[in-house]
Length: 196
Image 1 (cartoon, rainbow, N blue to C red):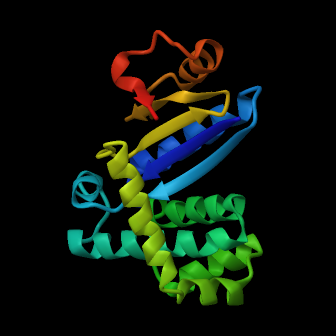
Image 2 (cartoon, rainbow, N blue to C red):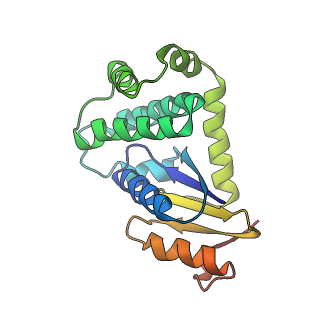
């Protein structure tokens, strides 16, 4: 089974596109997988994200990114699939349709997805969810992740090595995954190989 850890900045078009690309490729693979989206909000990742055509100021975007990350972590208690759908719908609203992030928008998207609003509200007020974002950062630091989007992939059949992919919206993900799964000791460039 593959374990995929995908580091994103919620209000970054490249992260939004990479989520679609990665999901599409994972669904075509002939192997089971566990897909984790990890919002990573740092000065380095957000600076790159904010050089886009979102009509707002950087500090406001940073606040929205953080709020959306907390929303995502809060909805995770209702399942990763629902959380991914929520994130995608919110990104569609803010990035594509250029709508302003608001509590009303969050509630409407959650209603549309059939989420439990009271459970979400309870989780969203829980101080523990901000600690989960800190754990994401610690995990990223351990593997020297400094750019979004990035992904770390481990195969349960190979607990020694994994791969890291950066800026993979344009990377040929099909070939990369199939090469990793078929050879394990791969001819991938050495900078892509991780050691546990």
